[in-house]
Image 1 (cartoon, rainbow, N blue to C red):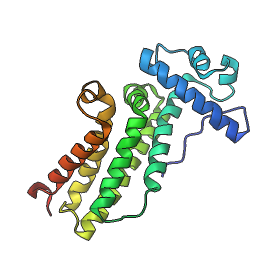
Image 2 (image 1 turned 30 degrees about the horizontal axis):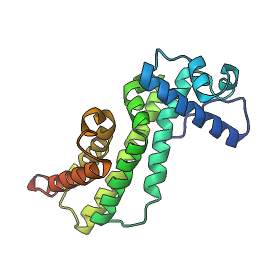
Image 3 (image 1 turned 90 degrees about the vertical axis):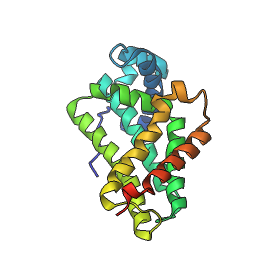
Image 4 (image 1 turned 90 degrees about the horizontal axis):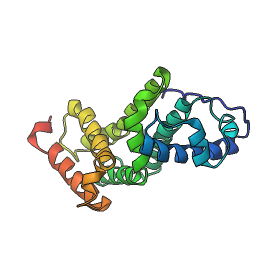
Length: 211
């Protein structure tokens, strides 16, 4: 796992750093969604977060740091949510549970996912590389689940197809965020989860994915 990219802070209290940065993330997401990254100023982020511009610069150095924190918070929550699931390795129930929890997290963090995909191109090169690496680690969680299901005989999916299938799960879930303008008119999140899971399982159990 790639080491976490350090965001410098002049404050030493880790609990206070976490609290203030969470406030920044919430404020920044609202502004980035409304105005875009480039049109948003750090002064506006500070105001939206509820503190002064001087306080903001005690916890970050640049506006790009805030965008990085938004992206990193998504991957941390995905990791926490999926690694905390009950062990059902190698079963379809375990796969369905993992998909459901991931998609519910996307529903909870719709704005964060939207901002990440719209604005991550504005990150400096080292931060962008870290974010892309974390994206692949998220895909790898589902790769491991699918490999376990394949090994147990629960799914008939070729070894070579597992990686693509894992990407499919991740991207189809994120569609709930960036296609919500259309999807939310017709589907609840539970209906979306049920239909996407059904489509996915039907797809990987077809002859095209067998070994």
